[in-house]
Image (cartoon, rainbow, N blue to C red; front, side, top):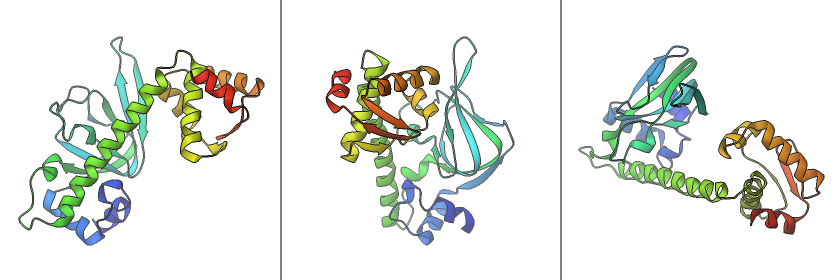
Length: 229
């Protein structure tokens, strides 16, 4: 388990907790490392989830099943990513997605009970763990609120403008790197990647922005704000 702890110690869930304390938490919660084969399903839509996981080797795909049978990858989970955490404090424990291993993978599995049942020693770092989980969930709510703000724009150019203005505000700079890859941004904005690329090209031709790979330079801030309105 020592090697696993070295992987997960940088996870936000264990912020402010040292390796010895993490080891105690894993023992107290009866956490286990589970291996999965390529394309093995960890859980599927409407399954009741009672545990969260951390990817410690390989990767997993979070997949949405549409009513017509089509399957769409919502996101890919890499090493140290969490899954199942959104249901930890929810009154509903039924997952809306499938989770499928991409290649041979491993995950550290922890039961939700670790957040509700204090160990006999009532350790301070147990309280830190719970606080970290609440911070993670709060950050997700903030992110979803920002996404709703972006998706409220009437046009794709408007969505892109709002997104870029958020990054401009965060970095306090007219030049910044987009944290998402192009496909991830297309998924986030709920559009096809070619449509996103076309709009970026159009905004560049109109001298509103310059784009080079993941780097964006806002050329005309006023016109970008007009698109966002």
